[in-house]
Amino acid sequence: MAVITGLATLTAYGSGPEHLWTGLLSGEPALSPVTRFEVTGRRARYAATLPGSPDLTAELAALVDRACTGAGLTGAERAVTPLLLARHLTTAVDPPTAPLAADCGLLGLQRIHTGACAAAASAVADAAAQLALGEHPRLVVAAGHLVTEDTFASFDSSGVLAPDGIARPFSTGRRGPLLGDGAGALVLESPAEARRRGATPLARIAGWGQAGDAHHVARPHPAGLGTARAVAAALHRAGLGPDAVGYVNAHGTATPAFDPSEAAGLHRALGPHAARVPVSSTKPLHGHCLTAAGMVELAVCALALRHRLLPVNAGHLGPDPACPLTLVLGRARPTRARYALSLSAGFGGTCTALLLERV
Image 1: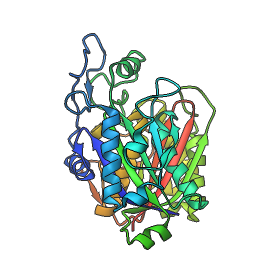
Image 2: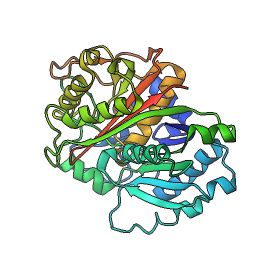
Image 3: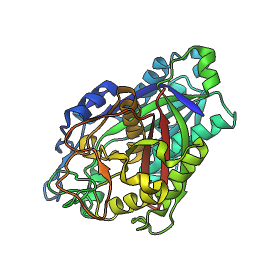
Image 4: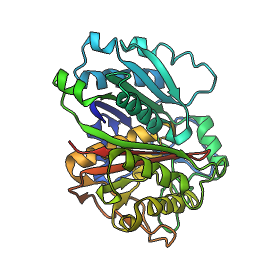
């Protein structure tokens, strides 16, 4: 379908996939008390943030450049490559975003995805679909989110964030996620184009699926209908059955409503295999990166398949009967998995599943 030939990431663990992977293997959350803005009087006071006050547009430009350099793209190849972006916009037209593609030597900004916490995954699915249709030989996808005072205040005032500073996905006693800085960029190419250029694929997008459960503006369908449809579509597009899935990087926000819904959706889509497949959410470690979550977590899947290790589902206190899943607990687990699912969901009922294959 499509292969990833360049990848760059930025999280509170540092810049580059190697820092992200080292942080995940440590099992130590990249969380710290928030100092970027005042949190006195807030319920939650922790987030996974970079030092200082980084500029998102500048960070995205640097990430796109690193991904293109890693893919070995020449200036001429960049000039015919469109950019897809996932980023929260506060206005209909965001001036700092407009020149991003030109600044990176790319053809132009084709589309901006703003579908809440599934935005980055949806942008990747969009790019993969265009490649499958032969519309372009190559696209660049970038996504970013930095923790801001207004976003933090919005989530905190709604009671979503974990007040104890620990996210516990699929666990008893879970009280919500914690936010995190996150950004990334990848170069996605048709296999034929990658072979022509002599590029080395990092992973393959074998399938993708998108759905909306249209249940509630901020709560998922209890039966996980959107998740189930997205996963089923990804497997159908790849021509695979449920048993092919060797790992699931879950959306796993550690909220009372979303986690049981996601577990139900996996059981609906994967059948009996859902009780066996290893599952983890890495949000307790790098934070919930909102608009960029799908980009960071797709990178996690690529790294897990490459290193043949599954990252831990941190913060777990004990099983919740409403989330009957086989979680990766304690430490990273060795794997021989060939395929991994990266799941993303957002307010409004949007769900995206990306099926990644080890190469």
